[in-house]
Image (cartoon, rainbow over all chains, first blue to last red; front, side):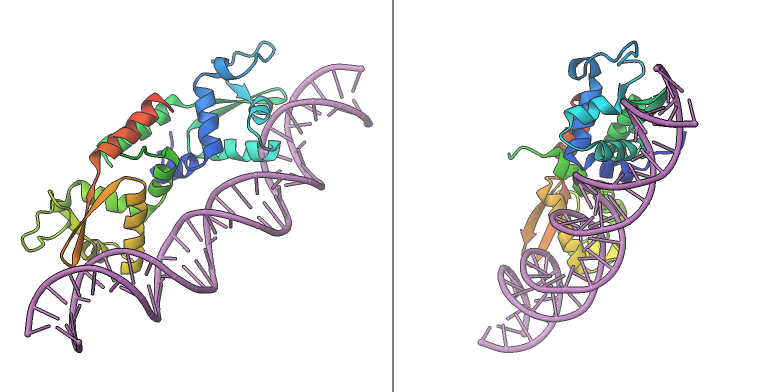
Length: 103
Length: 103
DNA sequence: TTGACATATCGGGAAATGTCGATATAATGA
DNA sequence: TCATTATATCGACATTTCCCGATATGTCAA
């Protein structure tokens, strides 16, 4: 577990599209269609589906997911051709706790 | 009460110096000297004291305090020549709540 | 009023970020 | 092996942010 940098987290959260992605990923079943046999909740949502909902290019979506990942807010799992992204609830809790306690 | 924009709050928090200021203001008595008759806790800390601790110019300090204020994170009180800044604990709680509940 | 001090604002150059299209890489199946 | 599909990365340009010095504004004291 690398320690999380609040600054990096806040930077990652300072963008409408990235915040949107995190909100969608909070309840994937409510926002994304099924993906042949891969559990949205357990594994995550693939980049194509996120790209389709965001009104941006695949390139941008992929980069934003990287930013979220570097901040520790999501976790990626590669299965075959697809990469599935899922929220890291622990990191989200940690940052809320940081604001409440340390900040 | 204008509603707070999480994005603006996160942008305000995306900077080391501004985060530092907020941390100092959490316990002003621990970080700043007395200021002739003005209560650090009740009223806040004046810009000069913050400038002195921050390793930046008065201009930058003033602008950073404005950013924090526009985000709703601090509140300013002018008394004579001085402007005293104090944290808005409600806003801080709100943003922590936002992360926990909505995000 | 004038001078001195505290703070705010303006203008700017350098660095970071937003976002794209083009291309590279990885994995699959024919 | 090759074509196809999913994702990642690169290069670029426009916009924003960082942080400064210079200057303006506000306030008090003499």
